[in-house]
Image 1 (tube, rainbow, N blue to C red):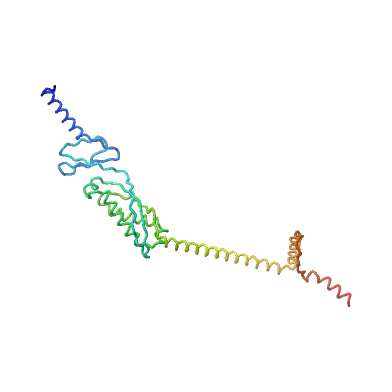
Image 2 (image 1 turned 60 degrees about the vertical axis):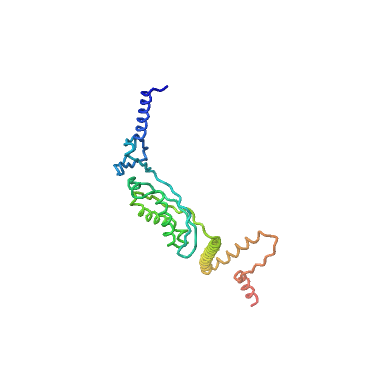
Length: 256
């Protein structure tokens, strides 16, 4: 049976243990402690072992690590009146823990709301083509605008990345047709450029043959050697009059 003196000793031990557990806090390397003493903020604590006064002090831990937050999909109407659904991811970290706690009620929630409204505002000023092609420029602009608004809270936004742009099904079909037309356009341009280069080479070859009469005969003999390998077909090949001209001249002399 416990005696009054033993009960008093146990009570004192429990009270001391409670006060020690409430007074001694251990903060990790990436954590800082914002301490309110009787409602007033005192200098920042941590990392390591931190001693506070129980009852009169209240410690709020703040992590200095970069936070990755998904921005929920937002319905956006672009400048060219196309409705798309866009979601993003935002990276931020509190640089000034005291401001992050005292200047805004919940800097996580506040940063998320700022990111959503800024996403709708900035992307709504862009056309669909810019939204799809100029992703890096839009990401940079979003980061600057959001960081400017969170700076009074001691929160630094390091990056904003647009993840997905969901288009209506009818717009996907339009883009597919546009891409197909663009490919056909490039194919026709390449074909026309090939025809132009070929005509230029043929013109050069014709000029060379015209300046050298024997070149035509050599070309004629080369063509004969090429077609002579095929013995399954009958080929009618025109004979140039230049080859018969010496024989015709001899015949005319005999007739005279």
